[in-house]
Image 1 (spheres, helix red, strand yellow):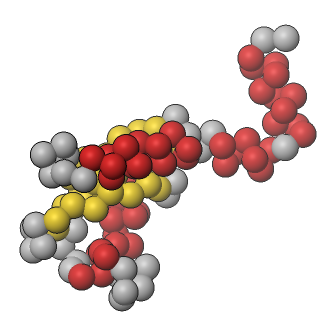
Image 2 (spheres, helix red, strand yellow; image 1 turned 180 degrees about the vertical axis):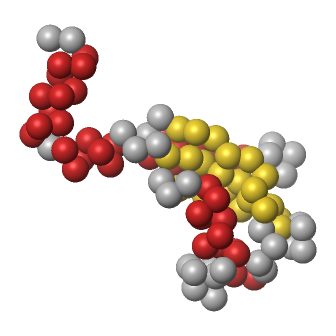
Amino acid sequence: MNFVGAFFMLYKQCPIFLCYYFMAAECYIIYSPKLNRFYVGVTNDGVAERLLRHNNHQYGGHRYTAKTNDWEIYIFLKAVDYSHAIRMERKIKSMKSKVYI
């Protein structure tokens, strides 16, 4: 059985899992000129939607991105799946340096 056949056979058994697993995910870095800081995150919703939520403080007033509302997209990286995006985010955060970004 080829990959396509195996995929559709698996999709019939568990469609919700496969839709989640194969959704396009992105790792993104946003920048605040006011704070002169970067923020690294991951999304399935799309970077533009996530940026809007950060700038509107929809994640609560106690979050790091709630300190200001001038966040702008610095860069975003497409990932194969959500777990790949998480691995990219962790790698970027592990560098702990503006020089790396």
